[in-house]
Length: 320
Figure (tube, one colour):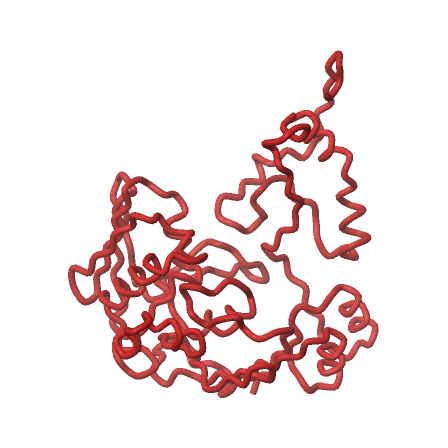
């Protein structure tokens, strides 16, 4: 059994609504998507490989994407995953129109020409389209569940239950205490190493650290940096550190004076002690970004990153 300590309950388990890591801890292993994100050794990435899809192709103009489904995927109740299930799941996502739907074109059309073929039609090319199909909102839901709970589009049921084809499924949820996941008996891929995964809700970070040190839990999620340093000093557990895609940044309203002046924004950027923040706030657990896209994410290009400060003479009147 694997025991994970998390700070809070999920807000919802409905893929068309999920918004944070507490939700995704349950939904990602409980559902499958057409494609899934690859891992590169210890690094995550946003490159993709097939999950439910065995292959895919795009038209020359990138407006039509055709996916061929694997023929052995099954939902947790044993029913097969079909192209119609994919179609219904995406149409429902767009109809609900909450946060996860924002990753997809609003006028996206989905067709299921046969049981194992899905075709997406876009009104214009959308470069990240393939990669968005790996996010949680693109989870494929069992049509039988949608039909059984059709009165509210299954929103109530899916907020507290899972109905996917992933390697795990939700067995129970005692709010404020724990969620229990068990293997999906019909999952055709590699069988999970754990027959039971318990996600314990432990609000205080110090309590999560203490339970990890005692061996009461196997993984402690979202520990602040000072707790990590304390764990390292105890030398009782393995503290694994990996690069992430998490980004912290400061919002500036560029539409209003004085921040509508590019030179002022450059001055703010150049005068910011980035390394001081990394060392002082994150205790060295981070690095300065050199552009809007973090390393490991689709679209990142190190050659395009401006790593040197261009020295410019001030204008006669300076910055207004």
